[in-house]
Every structure is written in structure tokens, then in C-alpha cells.
Image (cartoon, rainbow, N blue to C red; front, side, top):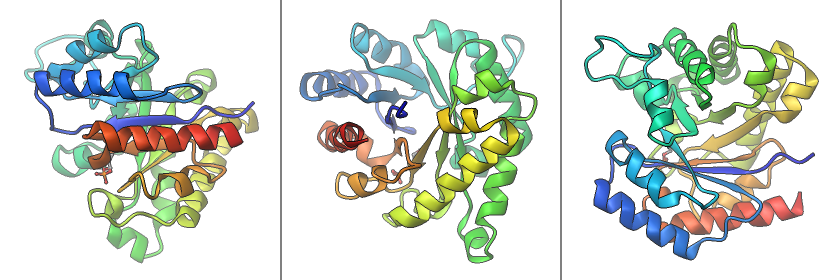
Length: 257
Ligand code: 13P
């Protein structure tokens, strides 16, 4: 069975609650969600308002981070059960900005993946090489290490339902997208690594997105690649019109699959 394209809008640290609500109303009023999965990733304060606004629609909500403990004296942190109660189905884990600015490591990513799965949240696990790593020819080595470590100790059934986002760090927010061929090569490699960890069936099932300067202009050629099952969109997800155009591209690709 063909994997369903999943288009997620990572708003990063943008949008107040009223801005998030206005965006969501515009999205619901203007997009056709048939055949694809659409996920919004607002900042923490807007999770519940956005979850309320999308209730009864196919749109799902993701947090951009979580902490691995369920509760406790961890000032400033938010747990998986709290996110579930706030209406989240997904959670982005290990985004390169968190690895770069907030000390996230392969080990903390693994703990967060397990916490998410324990509480019925689907992780969107971000992996991807930095520019210096790409230039040193280490892309495959880096993503292999990140994937292996993110899923260490995770059962096959849970892992196969997760989403992996390949986001080359040099392509994030730079306007410099990976070529469809390069992105396909890494996504296909990631699927192979996942198959080695689990089974060919799990590799066939797991969805692997591409992220990094995805726009309405380049979405179709990226999403048409056989191992690219959706996009994790930053900048272009902040305006309803450009996000809808990317959803439309995914819908056309899905129909052709
Ligand atoms: P941009 O689409 O702005 O490059 O951001 C990508 C990203 O980091 C999504 O998580």
C-alpha cells in the first residue's frame, strides 16, 4: 500500500495565539486535505487553541519538543501526557535547531522518542547533516548514526509508525534546497538503515519526509521522489496560501502514486 504523504508546518517560534487561530481558520477554509495528512506544529501556547480550531477536520497538531519525564520538578519543560491532553497527536523531536541551540543529543532524542511513544504521540524524528559534514562526505554516516540512535530500544511496531524527517542543516532557512536527487538518495539510504534495524516491511511502512527550504515552487519535484513521503516545512508554512500550495502538490503526487 502506498504511504500517505504527510505535510507538516513547523512554525518554530512564530505566531501568537490569535495569529495561530487566524491562520488555522484560513487554512481550513481554503485547503483540500483529501488523500494527504496535514499537521500543524505551533509553539506551546497555541497548541490547545489550534487543536480546538482543527477539531472535526483531518488536520492534526504536533508539538515542537517535549521532555522525557511524565512530570516533576523540571522548570520550563512540557511532558508527553501534557501534550496529549493539549490535543497533540505528533511531536517533532531532535530538530537541528534544538540540537544546535539547546544541547539536544542523539541520547536525549532517543529518550524523547521513547517518551512520546509511551504516551501515544507519534514522533517526527529529525535527522540531517551540517554543511561541514556534507562537504567532508559524511552525510550518510551522520544520518545513519542519528537514525540508529533515535530508535535504540524501540520496538518495531512503534518505530514503523513513526515519521522521520531528513533535514540537511545547510538547507534550513537558507533558500538552498537539496536537489530532488540528493534528497531521494538520503531518504532511500535512511529507509535502508531502518530496514536493517527492523525489517523490510517496517522500512516499507515508515514515512520519511524531506525538510529544508521547501516552497510551493520546489515541492512537487521533491515529493515526487519515491522515498520522499512528505515535507517538514518551515518558512513556507507561515502563510496559508503557500502552505496550501504545498498541500496541493502533495495531493497531486499522492494521486499519481
Ligand atoms: P525552512 O522551510 O524555513 O527551511 O525550515 C525547515 C525546517 O527547519 C522545518 O522543520
